[in-house]
Length: 314
Image (cartoon, rainbow, N blue to C red; front, side, top):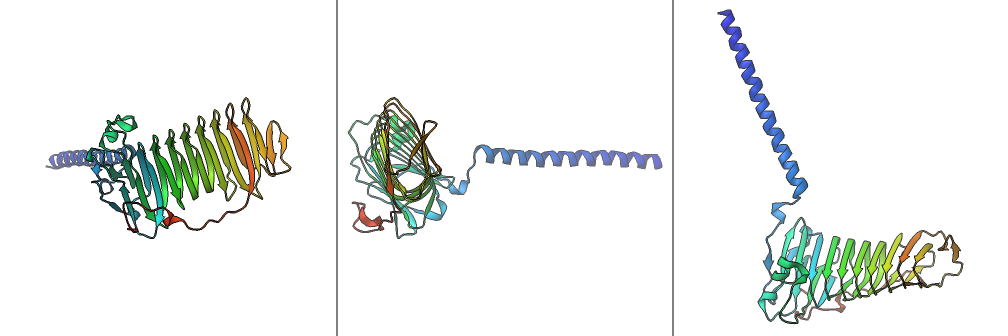
């Protein structure tokens, strides 16, 4: 009897250890799968919507608290992004005669993605439209809305923004111009062929790659770094009176001029003051002009440009 009892205890102990092992393995596998899905597909199902089309003359309205990033792919026309005295993000486009070319959109990971039309969503900006189609995109955001990330991929579209606060902005374009007025951008990355950029405001770093485009900037504060790579473009910027910069130029016929007297040449680098703004210029014929400036507070011009499809603000 005692021997049988001992045998039963041993058998049940083995079974218990086996079941505990199975349970531990199951929990570990669940955790691994969850971690894997988060690492490879970091999305919240509640925040994701499928691709949708915006019917002509209708407005897309979104809760600004659920969106902190915008991604745009646009073929031709104007892209206008402005703050307004509203609590939602609203998106409209100019009149579209053919509904096949209505804009499409989706949301994922707190980012609003907008594309020119359904065909561009399938094949990118390399679409071949039968008509010379151009339309405008209007995006209005709350005054205190801060954009974590803004990505714009535009073929021949022009971009206009005012009074925006942005963490990272990435602009890829061909020939459209870009006007960023009174904006605060931490990191600005621009890649364009011949589209000139006009900027006023503050930023920390600028990467500007262009074929023949120019960057004209009015900086309220001294940036920390500016990198220019252009074949025949131009860098024309104004810096505050208390600025310091160091400019390295690698070009065949590039020219340098500055309104800051006291700029000296050290190790093939133009240096003024403490040299804290590092400017690297690489181009065959890329001129650099540094102008004196001060803080340039501008009046609020948010309402200066209106959506022509609306008679009043939403």
